[in-house]
Amino acid sequence: MNSQVSIIILNWNGWEDTLECLDSLYRIEYPDYNVVLIDNGSEDESIEKIKEYCGGEIEVHSKFFKNVQQTNPIEIWEISEKDALKNNFQKKEEFMKQLSNKKLILIKNNENYGFAGGNNVGIDFVINNLNSEYVLFLNNDTVVDKDFLTEMVKTAKSTNVGMVGSKIYYYDYEGKDNVIWALGGGGMNLKTGFVWHNKFRKEDIGGLGDNLECGFITGCSLLIKKDILHKLKGFDKDYFCYFEDADLSARCKKLGYKLLCACKSKVRHKVSASSGEYSPFLIYMITRNNLYFVKKNHGSKIYCLIYLLTFRLFGRLFRLGMRNELGLIKYYFKGIYDGLKI
Image (cartoon, rainbow, N blue to C red; front, side, top):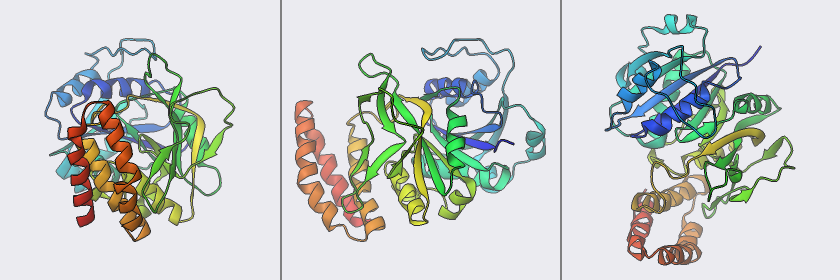
């Protein structure tokens, strides 16, 4: 018997990416899953477009799968943030009786709570209302292969595995679609908060085997047993976004679980689609959360502060200088200042 999986996707002003992601999901071979889509207070027409898609009114185009107009509409259950948090899913029995995977729970958050807070609304809903054994967090700017979830669940059933990631490719890297963004995730240094991706920007030449142990699993594609997620109490909302997946990984490892990449599970990711590459927001949040992560998981900020004011600073100055954007360095120092106050 296959284990049921709840797939949580977060949307914020990105309905076009979200629809391509959903369309790839509804083509997968795994037999028992449900999709919980959290709209994180979008200010565009996301809600309307998602409902139109579920009604078969929008045809999705992607270079990674054949475009076939939907013939069977996707049943949609709309839930307010208030009802989701109060465990007030009035059509729960009706949803459970629907055996088809072509269904969607749409939770409408009142505002943008970031990756951590937005997903936590979905976590609470899944734990309190659905019978899933596993929860999968999936970025809305991804496209999945048809057997990606089958391979993840297979790996998750190995002994003492706490979290599982996918082999994640760039959606498009200089015209190539076989360049790796991350193998599951990568490694992390608890003293400095430095995290890195396995096989980052390397072309996939095979030979990786079935599974690879990781230091952390990226939240881009992260499968975790619901019981473990409940013990961990979800993501730490104080991160808002960035480092919340590394933090969840660190806490999972402290419980004694292994983190693995299911190397046969393939996902394609439109990197930086929501925050922008080298945007002020990204520079600030990564720097701020770098310090918070170290304080929380190592107990001291001194190593991290030295690292941020030496090696990391010179690296950031060099990259911004190459892009003629040195003015953005002020957001780096603001991140350090605010990170020290947390």
